[in-house]
Length: 117
Image 1: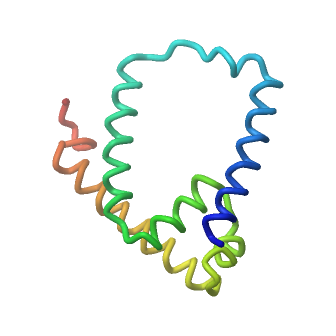
Image 2 (image 1 turned 60 degrees about the vertical axis):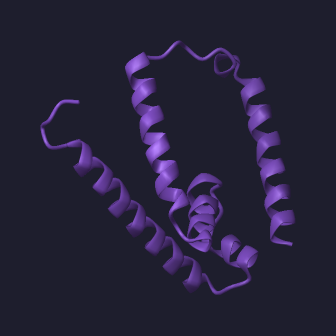
């Protein structure tokens, strides 16, 4: 049931996004970006992916549904068939764990401490 709901919602969102992109021709041909920014974004994305993968499945799913898919707390609670308070606590724990993981990553690489890479 959860997978079905997720699939249907993702499909609906994809259709809406496609219509928006088709309506705005400037989105069809994005400008060429800065290579350094792209490389940095890729590195951070990899670290973010690793940090997300380290989270317990329930926390990760709640976080992705909320932050990436834009579901409300109530919608997530309905998907998981649990109280809204449980969703809130899972999100708080997931965010805290991500913060620790990413802070550790930054500290190991000297990011934000005045050091150059």
